[in-house]
Structures are given as C-alpha cells and as structure tokens.
Image (cartoon, rainbow, N blue to C red; front, side, top):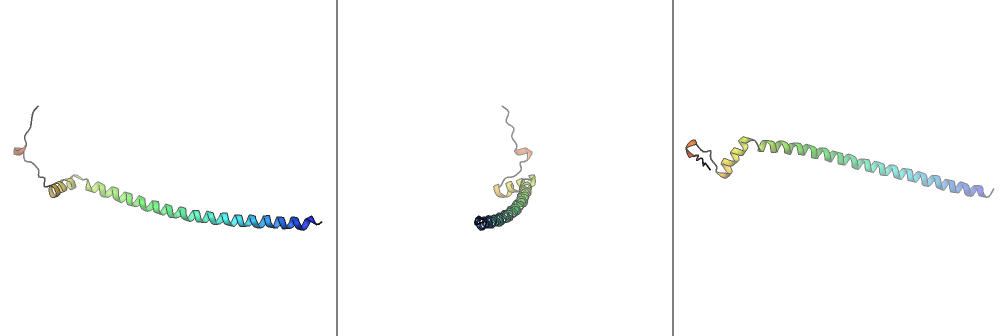
Amino acid sequence: MSMRPLTLVVLLLVVVSSSVGVVYSKHQARKLFVELQALANERDDMDIEWGQLQLEQSTLTTQGQVELAARDQLGMVSLSADNVVIVKP
C-alpha cells in the first residue's frame, strides 16, 4: 500500500503538467491567430493600394496624358503636312 501515495503524486504531476501544456498551446494558438489576422489586414490594405496604383498608371498612360507631357515637359509639337519629309530607300 505504500506505492499508492507515490502513484497519486506522480499522476497529479502528470495531470498538472498536461494542463499547463494545454494552456500554453492554447495561448500560442491565440497569439498566432492574432498575427494571422494582422497579416490578412495588411494584405488587404496592400491589395487596395495595388488597385489604386494600377488605376493611376492607366490614367497616366492615356494618349492625352502622354501628348500633354510631350508638349509641356519636352517641348514637342505636332508636325504639319508641310514639315513631313518621306525618305524612300
């Protein structure tokens, strides 16, 4: 009968360590879930910014914008038919 108290103590230690392990793993799972949610929010923000950048790029590359930039920034002008010279090979 002297083994019975020792067995109970060992079982108690196993149960306590198991419960501490469950609590720790649950805490880790919650911490990782919070990180996952933050990363998902960051991904969504980046998706929105990517869409805005694509929209901005499409407006900047329209024919009118290119022509306006060529005139204003580079000083280019449209040629008249009199100024065009066709070179034949």
